[in-house]
Image 1 (spheres, helix red, strand yellow):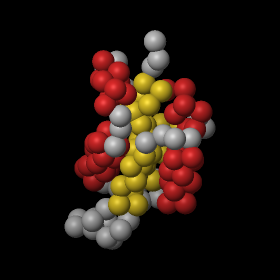
Image 2 (cartoon, helix red, strand yellow):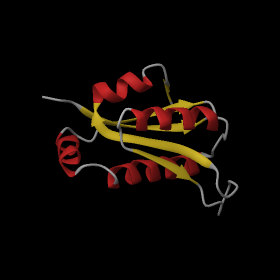
Image 3 (cartoon, one colour):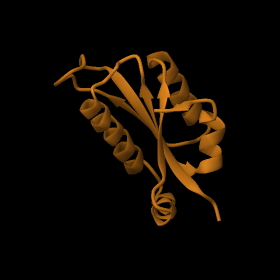
Length: 115
């Protein structure tokens, strides 16, 4: 049986307040889910919807991993803040990847640290 997971990458240089961080991660999780294949979603849900939040250092690294994920045919969702609270409009905060097969995602993010 294939194992599935979802990963959310969060920029550390923004030093987001906890509430803002949580909302941005939620946006990434949901938006990536909306873009995913229904069969993959079902498998992922049946396995308990595993997800991991990892940190990247800055916008450049965030965009690098977003592109690598796309190049590996993984679903991504780049979250860009509207700027209504703590951030400037257009700030790229995080990226949701998957859900997809864990091995495929692990190969991409193996060196990143947990948030």
